[in-house]
Length: 93
Image 1 (cartoon, one colour):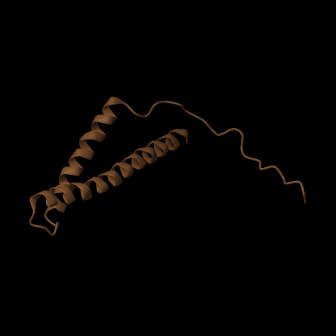
Image 2: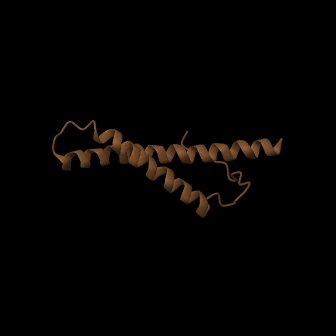
């Protein structure tokens, strides 16, 4: 009881392909999509800010759309990873 069993962790993680999946073209596409989404969400959210002060409308429209744009960026990255994994799995069949 005095001796604890050592925690055994897997020593070798499966590292198949170390290719870089980020290219300048993919960064440009991501940038255009993210900026476009931010502008779209800003136009939607700015009209829903309950204020008549233009500075507050700009501030809260930008803050709300920046949060949503961050979530959009994460979803875009997850989509890319999933699509790549599905293509590699299909190629391996």
